[in-house]
Image (cartoon, rainbow, N blue to C red; front, side, top):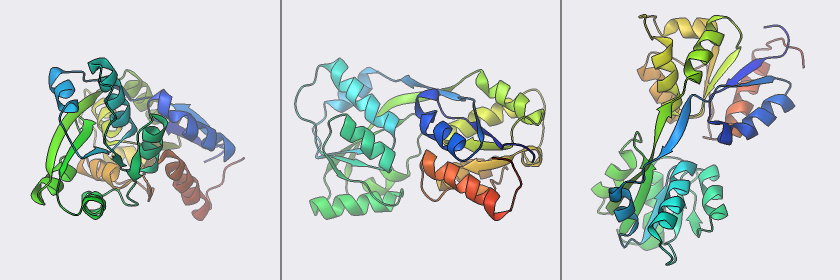
Length: 259
């Protein structure tokens, strides 16, 4: 690689600023390709779930927090919400900004860790509202339910692919991107559908064209299911950690580029 490293950031623009700033600060060139857009799911089922009496709120993403707040406003709810438990620092910060009382942010984004935190707080199983996206996995809900917790599952949003997926694929194939970052499984799926559109091109060819970086184990799992092995996986599921891990990889490999 010659010149400054060109890093594709595939997050929605509203969530990409921190990563953009960090890439520039480290001497790279950020290229924004928001592959997905978040669409609210303000269904009657969702609004009804928000009215259910629960002991605690559980959020796995910033989008979940924002959907919960918007749903309460739409439903005209004014009573104080229960305490919140959030997966990830960014989710916790979003909940605090929204005025929620955040009791805990588990250090590890795993179902058993969230359950452990809740059990420590409440002593015995209670009733929780879990706000997620339509494509979210069921591991957390299944784990809580298996240990006696009553889970009110609320689908607050869904993700849709944007036309930028095809532009990003074209840039990769032209050699205009040095690293492709994925911050969610939804972004991976959107890119992959565009990558194989109209042709059965093996996933391994992607890795021959560009370095693939994943925001964490869950996103890496999605990549691997599609036959893509990322060279970089950040330990912490945050945009900051992802970019830090990417540039640390290049430094360890002694990859030459001009800053």
